[in-house]
Every structure is written in C-alpha cells, then in structure tokens.
Length: 597
Image (cartoon, rainbow, N blue to C red; front, side):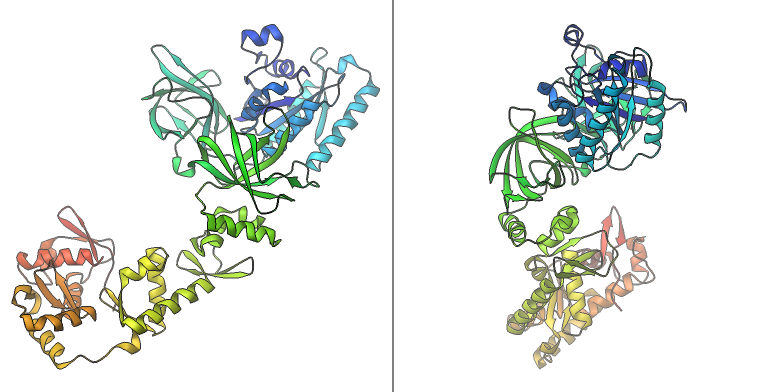
C-alpha cells in the first residue's frame, strides 16, 4: 500500500484530478461542496494494474489552510504538484513546493491540469515555467505530465508514472506512527481516529500509546480504505476505534504508536534550521515568535537562536505551549505568524534537555565557524560531543569529532582528554587518602556506573591501582599489615566459613578493625559476622563452583560445595547479592558475575 497526495494552488483542479484517478470525490464537507473549495484533508484510493492500493490525500490549496496542507504531506510516498494550464505557476504553488521541500518529500510528479482550456504553445510555456521553479527549489526537474479530465488526456500516463515512482521510492524516512488527522466519537462504538499509518503494523486487540499524554488504549476495530480489517500495515489509510479512552483523550495532532520509546515528549526541542533554497542563508532574530507545523499538528512557538543569526544553517531552541512528541530527524515547517509564508525548514536535533553549558558549547562552536552540522545530524554524536561520553552505534575504535579524539570502551565512547583528566584526579586523590570506595568514584566521576568500572579496570590492568573488595587503592600504596592486623585476621579466619561474630570484637580491637575495613581486608555480613576478604572470596568461589553467568541454583545446591548450615548460608547468599555476584529470583539465585581468577 502507498500514500500519495496532491499539492498546489487553490482551484487548480486537484480534487477533480483525484476523482478522475479514483472515481471518488475527496471533498466531504457541505461547505466544500458549496464553495468548491477543499478545506480539510480529503481521501480517496484506487487499485493499480498490479492490484496495489494507492491512497490519495487531497490537500487544501487556499493559503488560509496551508497548515492543514502540512498534515497531508508528512506521510507521502509521492506528491503530485498540480499546476493549471490557464493560470500557470502561482503564489500558493510556490508555498506548497516549499512545504514539500521542508517535509523531505523528494518524489514529485508535476501535473499540468486543464489542458483543454489552452493551446499547445501555452502548454509549452507552463511546462518550462514548472521546470524552472522546480530546478530552483530541488536542483532537479521532475517528470511533468499534461492532463485534462474532460478529454481524459494524460490520465493513464499519469498512473504509469505514479507506479514507476513508487517502485523506486525511498523507504525508512517515516517514524512508527499514526498521526491523527481527525477524531470523533460514535455513540455505541467509542472514540475513532483517522490517519496515515507509517512504519508499523496495527492489529485488533493490540495495546497502543497515545502521545503526548502517554495514555494507553486497546485497538477495538480497524478500517483500512473503508474496509474492516484485522490488521493494517505501513502505507494504509486507516480509521481506528479505541477502547479505554474518553471523548477528549484523542484529538487531531496526537500520535498513536506501538513504540512510544521512539519519541521524547517535551515542550522544547533543538532544531537545525536551513533555508528552502540551497543557495540562500537563514537569517533570524535572536528570539522570534513563529508558527510551526509537523505531522498533523501546528502550534505557535518561540525560537531562540544559538550562535550566529545569519548563516547557511542556524541552531535554535524551540519552545511550544504544550508537550509534543519529538524524534531526531523529524521535519518541521516554520511559518511566519499569521500568514502563509514559509520561512525555513527545520530538522529536530534532539528533544533531550540541554543545559545552558551545552547550549553555550554549541553557540561557541558555531561562532568559531566549526562545521558542527554533521554532529547535529546525529543525536548520539551530539550527546558524545556535549558530554564527552555516550553509547554510539559505531564499530570504529576511535572517532574524531571537531578535532577531538574519542576511544571506544566496551559499548561506550569516551573523550581521550576527559579520560586522562578523570584518571589523573583519581590517582591524585588516592595519593592523599590512600583508599576510596569504588561506589564513591562511580558517583564522582560523572560517568555511567558501567563506564566508570571500565576506567577502573583499565587502571588496574596498567598496574596503577588495585581493587580490594569495595575499595580502590594505589598499587604502590599497599603497606604491609601490622602485627595487630595480622593477628586479628588470623583469629577471625580460625572461625572458618561460619565467620567471626561481631559481638565478640573487643573494644581495644575496634581501631584495628576500622583500619582493616578501610584497606578492604574485611567484609561484614548482615552486621552479624565478619570475614577476612580472602575467606569471603573463597566462599564465593565455592558457592559458584561450576556455574555459569545466567544460571540459577538453590540453597541446597549451594551447600553441596559449602557445607554450612542454613543459619550461615542465608546471610552469605545475601552478601553475594550485595556484592553483585547473584540476584535473588524467588527461592533461587541467578549468577550475575563470577569471581575473577
């Protein structure tokens, strides 16, 4: 199934052409019939010779309904740009062409209508006019087909051209979404929404999420191209009946999806703003009030430009009154407030919050003339550049971003200069305080816990630090144990796997216990028993003997290798859980990691 749509000046024959292609009048409202003017989106469909369903969206051409036009364009596989032979290229033709460019529609057929009203010389002039304007906007000239619905001229040729374009259309530019273009309530049935379904399949009985509210609903029934269906896939025009939502909980502009994690719902987003025409520059005030349109919604917005105000592209923070669902790469049309003038096209960089420091970092780079548009086109690279570390779906060992080097560590990339700074800070602290809890380093490093652990392991492999239980020490800072410390360890080890009761520790021994604990030589189990770290790791090795990460075991199976009573085994297993070796699942334990050998 495919979705194509019309675009062009009012009264240039869009709806009449759709009727000639499909046999269906797309104008539905009485006001449209009376005024011969398309006000909202109209829909029709036909089957081509390959028995494929081609859905057609007929958009309004009048400048007052330019925002409705965007709602029809977002989901198109192909656009038919309509130009009447008697009028030729008009102001709204230019506006609609700009919107096609801004929304990323690159498969276009120009259709000359009303050919029966003019002579062949005039048709040639209009043909050249269209070719010139399209080359100016898109740097290419599309197929131009001359038609007349009254003489049937060019209708079959147009259908063949549509099939040829759809066969090679670009895929993957659509988000997983049904962007609602109409919603209403039917007594006895429930809330109904209509729209174009892209990049996902919907099935009856399935649970969907309505964004930005995050409300979940169940698909009660589906209609696709006016026929009841059990499921509908990409490229379908559908009506969906929802169960579990009220009259006002689904409305035009809402987004229905099965993958809400694809989106970030926010009142702000950062945009890359580019001109409609490639040879131009974008020029804006530092703060502007504009209207924006994307998918099937439009809104008033405040745009605050970061960095230069006139350049081949601008970066800006956009704010709207209510939350909207955003995703990186989303196309946005910027329209002058109160008019139909398209100001620029914009692409969402990220809707994740950027603090003032990050915004300043972007502005500084732009003012310095750095080419950061490549970074701005990839949300993962942007996060990496702004924070110095991030997960990036790349395979290279190193990345170069604006002159800085980033090295891969596991699934993470970390800026080399930042890694050096973190390592130097850790070593400096260990020189003064001898030891640091591993958990404290993870919190203070500013990195994710996983990446901080990788940094510690890297320093350990280089022999600069050692991890002793829950603490980190400088390798060179390990001092031999005192006679009192050695004697205490020997005393508690004499208790074997049952541990030394904490209540047996004498008052004079408490300073020694504190020093040993600081050095990572002791571990307390449920504040009841104390073990030397060496004995505890022996216990861990015995309990996990012969087991693999992901496997599970019972208490009885643990006791096969460590013959202690349940009184001691339960606290020991709880200690293994605290140290991250196992996780409890009901009455069993699952192995999370194995002790290092």
